[in-house]
Image 1 (cartoon, one colour):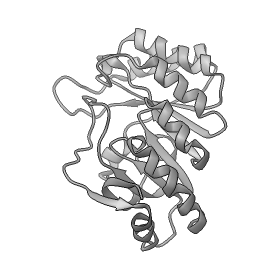
Image 2: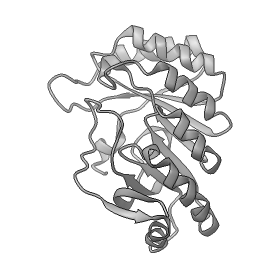
Image 3: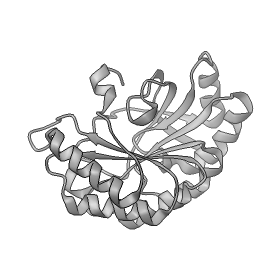
Image 4: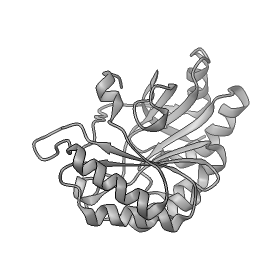
Length: 230
């Protein structure tokens, strides 16, 4: 039986994107395939779970939450485990499955997409510190595989975010041809190199994305930091 490294299991409110404030049961997986400058998740320990042990732990919680949030780290590192666990969860709970992901592992997404209801993916903009190299091809494929699901596409922006990256983001959104919610997230400062962008910059990026993609774009802060929650 497959196992996964999990750092935390807890109930809280979603702090990012259009679901912010929704009560969710979070399963935070250990490990990530990227090292983003603005990441605020410090994972120093984990426990190893089998699918049955994880389900038992989840069933210990009341079922008055809205979604099961798979977060990290990067949960798709554990795609083989999730492929076995999610059908078991669905047999025992009615909540939707909400996948929080960096959107760079399309092959892993194929393993679990049939068991996921909501995909919340980050577009990693190199100029913001989201990745050392552009991952545009992987992220475009990831969006396309998420077609038919409720898709949220987010990008963290700062004063260092380049217009070229916003153009690339607009291009892959437009090329995907699928319905989605687009969110720009001004980053909360985490060091001297990453600062919160001004309103004029946010408005400019939003206007460009809306004109190029034909989609409404939200500008929403990383609300979990504003609310003081995980």
